Amino acid sequence: MPTDPMPDFPAGFRWGVSTSAYQIEGAVAVDGRGPSIWDTFAHSPGRIVDGSTGDVACDHYHRHTEDVDLMAGLGVSAYRFSIAWPRVQPGGTGAANPAGLDFYDRLVDDLLARDIDPVATLFHWDLPQPLEDAGGWLNRDTAHRFAEYADLTAARLGDRVKLWITLNEPFVHMSLGHGMGVHAPGRMLLFDAFPVAHHQLLGHGLAVGALRARSTSPVAIANNYSPVRLAGDTDADRAAAAAYEALHNRLFTDPLLGRGYPAGQDFDAGVVRDGDLAVIAAPIDVLGVNYYNPTAVRAPEEGSPLPFDLVPLDGYPRTAFDWPVAPDGLRELLGWLRDTYRDDLPPIEITESGCAYDDAPDDTGRVPDPERIAYLDGHLRAVRAALDDGVDVRGYFVWSLLDNWEWAEGFTKRFGLVHVDFDTQVRTPKSSYAWLRDVIAASRRAPAA
Ligand code: FCB
Image: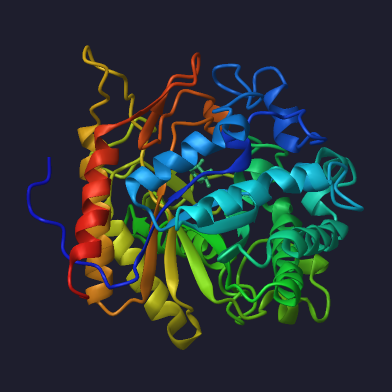
């Protein structure tokens, strides 16, 4: 258990929690919602480790009032949630479904009534299935459909959402969903998945324009980043690390910040049309950074289809996901972003940071999670150190408020500050919830740092 007091954070630092629609909402056939690629994928045998689906998840759709109370009790100043595109446009195109937007309208008003800033992500991987049937993100038209959906959503919520996030982790959606086939839609295209990168980025740029026309609130994207650690000292290892860095950290950032695609990538850029890069580089107000762990990389084995080999990173404790707990990687990453993008880098918010452990109630009904407290303590200190290094970090959102449905891992990975019994839907704040509540309260009392 950490004992040193947490250092102060700047006045106005945004404390938040993050979730996403398919992972918590349930109510998949309610109020006109259409199917998404995650409904299809989760219902396909063998895709999810425990055979579960997000049909009910945390039943947040019906319990959002209780969940907003939990946020208020924690004292957060912001809540990052995602809007389910198939609730707004059940078929992926055409007029908005008012009942679907009503849910988010109520949620936004509930949040504002509790002084919590609504931070809305437009796409957290739940593409309407009819758009997938037409090619999904391999099809350029999906970028235009995304902008249309952004317009419909901002027309309804643009006066109250305080920060827009266009896409969540387009790298992960490309690589796990379209490269390796472990996430929806389950395609295994390896480097032929590049059109998915380009069309997501194009959709982002078009959506920035649509949001600006409807809302004066700032606009961001949430990228996943992983600092690359060399696991070898040959030139081939260094080349492999550079290739991985370009793919994971730069492919979705260089073009956003006006630098075009990184050179030397092994993909066919034939889908990039004149003018696209200017659309993609539409100015954003905030860069959302989702950080979980560094990646150790060395040269690939002979005959590997990939230009790198990912290996375990030694020397760190590990979460239940077997991810290394490396807060030093967060400070390193923030420094890397500043040094790489310099004046082009907008202010940063950490839009996801968190860990999974096998948390369970003890005999007294409490849920002790000392590892999560240690994790959050370390990562908050890393953010504080990055601020001292001169990086402009404006907020930190914990992934996640609730234990929820963790994609291909189903219900087997618990990331919440609040334990959820998935049989009864009973929510029990863990000890990390009380710890974070006290950190936030102390930071509010502190003189501006
Ligand atoms: C991120 C996702 C989020 C959650 C966490 C653990 O990659 O954005 O939905 O699954 O990982």
